[in-house]
Image (cartoon, rainbow, N blue to C red; front, side, top):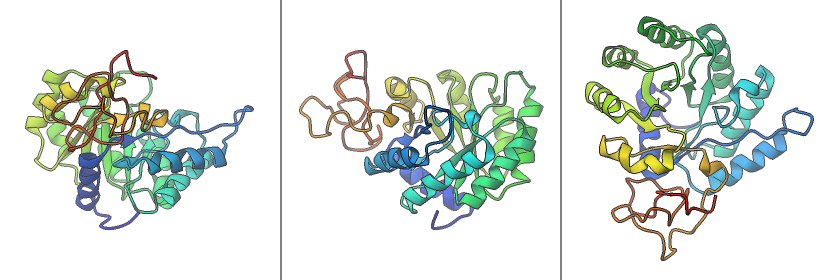
Length: 270
């Protein structure tokens, strides 16, 4: 937590982070009996932050948001905020229906998170009007900026994207569909300062393709396991302009930077 806390201020900080590093989605550590392991979670987050990501997203999909009760969620977000110490934005996951999402959003706000990532709602399909209303109702109940997430049963049309972009606190969209034709239509319809990032399950592999439609930043679950599997100075690693597929795995630098980046294939050692 730090700096300008307005939606535009957080969007600016998050955009700067996206330009210099991958977006880290840390794991949540549990004991063998299924209870939260705060010390393990703290050590894991600290190690990810040491690798220099552009932002950290605790308690999202990789961090098993849906496995956490409200008190565990509070601990996980608090740990990330304490470890980040204002160095990078902390974007906490939230989800379920809007009412439950608002309760978790309130906890994230109290814990000091900078923004929210709204995970897709559970199971059922919803009309576009419902997808927009979900964000409108959540925005009315939290002061935190919001990043929407389309994946699975959530997919915004151009018209819906324009509507959510007009919600003052909605600052961006994470895409997990990898439909680049559709995504390009969304990027062209959005305001210039609206953030987009690649949230595909194979984000590292698809980084080049997403960059061609103007979405160079990506979230990385691989970063949770191999934040820097080879040093950027390795002779086998390419540069942002001349990457060599398979030579570099999940580094903490983005395809828009001038240092080693991540374009792995099946030869990567993870």
